[in-house]
Image (cartoon, rainbow, N blue to C red; front, side, top):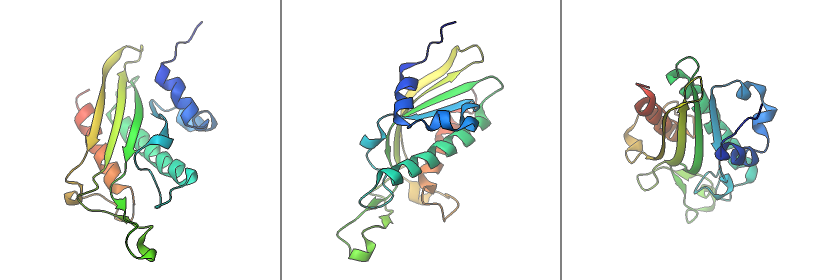
Length: 171
């Protein structure tokens, strides 16, 4: 039996450093989240001079969040494949501030969260129920009630939650 995998799935395995295969809980999930070329994303830094380790930690948290939330919208047997091609986190670093503030992400209207992604919602037999490309952004993110306040990714996660509610509410 020959298994056909979509190209974006194969690309994602390269981009996720084997994390999918290394985590059996993720392999059992009906939600697949792949980041394509995350080193080229607009902004997934954990500090002004972001590190690979920081980027991986941020993306791992976003991946886990999408997987956990998306399951709520799937019916039995359905699968969701999400391919993220760009992330620009809410807020930004302003290195021109005093030295002790250059690693603090400043949140203001100028820096809204943005995510570009492709998705496919599949039925149990593999037929495509819904698919598309979305460019998410939340220009009014500072007016949202994103919780918990201690979560540095709360605005980004709330934007993803809103997309899931809109996109899959009636799927």
